[in-house]
Image 1 (cartoon, rainbow, N blue to C red):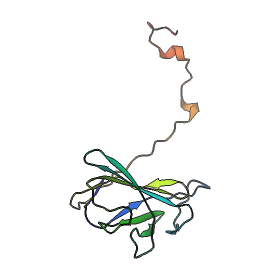
Image 2: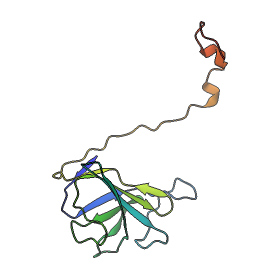
Image 3: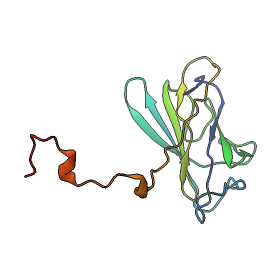
Image 4: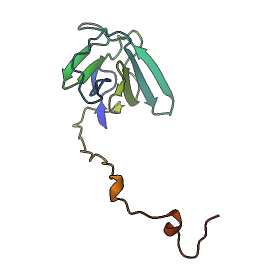
Length: 150
């Protein structure tokens, strides 16, 4: 989980955005004013309260600058105190969820700590086991000898 400072302008990276036609191509050119785009900033504060705030992305120089990073990833700038609807002024866990083609979101970010180096842990994909490799068994054969089916 990345850690970001509170009461400072921060950038949150999220993605990748995946094409909803083939579900594998990365969407690398989503403009800040894409039709139907909704962005929610969700903060779970240290006391357990959760707030959801809708923000409207802007081009450079606005409150919530939207920038295409690369390979379908995007950055959203969140201001410390000058934002119209959201400000980075609360300690807690921050998540940004974007709805354009299909929902995609940022990793959770902990706000309120000094900047530190974040570490990404590689995750191995869970591959389905082809059905023909599973042994053919009846449900009764999976029960211990002393058990019975109802």
